[in-house]
Length: 434
Image (cartoon, rainbow, N blue to C red; front, side, top):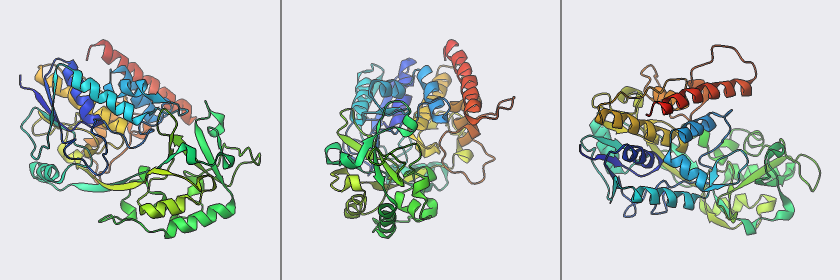
């Protein structure tokens, strides 16, 4: 049996390599780093995250929390490394990004069934192969994928928030607290009064944006919308979005602030913080000027400014099956955000499912059935649903999971029932030795 080629060592490719290797299949893992990097990548290691909270919420009442729990029980490399490098963040699975990436890289390099090649692939190889080069696929390979399928790509834009040093935050105008005091106080909160907020919004709306070819507000993916785009939608849009003050009390006044900017730790040492919800594509000097209008961040030291980059994805419902494989040739599969699953956890899930299916095909076994009652199965069924006319990338959510037979009025209780049903199915699959 020839080695399975995996192109790309992001979260999807890393997960796929691990699952195949653990099933006794030789893997040739190709990644163009360190010789070449995409605009979003800085480190030489694999599975690089742009944010400490990229793995997002961890409660079962949240769909991504359910997906993570499914992956934990299924033996996911990404979730195991996430748990080992976890940092405090309330109900979220936040990680020390560098330690996480280092750990994933170390495990892949040390696996006896994985051989790593540092080179750029510019053509879709013959199968067996899983292409997992992400939404920032190189131009050469992107063109090759378009030629392979004989169809055009679609694209949207993704944004990353800036990072600041902890020591530059004015803690006389900020405080530690989690919303509604849930869990430990893991966020630094920066209050703004009405006058400060309105002045901030005014400057944010008029600030100079970096040139991004082809950018239009309507094409911004809603789950990662730049803060300046959000501000243009209305004076109070930010106060009902990332700057909402609900559930927070300013100890300086004893009252709920008019608006609050939250900061979340970006590393285990709590020396660097992320501006929550502040994805942006403003010019770097403008980011410093406008974001420093936040009282507690007047003297903020930026260690990374927000960036904006093009993300590319396939019209998967026309091309791929529920296991992310080419409908014409199931030994050629794709995984990650290029398939239309949005988010790092979702990418890891697609890597897992594509690898499990590939292993079953190569070992002449039945492919495990992950039904629509599970989050991981629902994602695969979403990206392969030929009935979808206008396909757009999507995060995992309960609306794509099969509904319950019984009616439950309270949303949290209904979501928990959906999660428990899913995990029962996952546990049965694990017992069957998938």
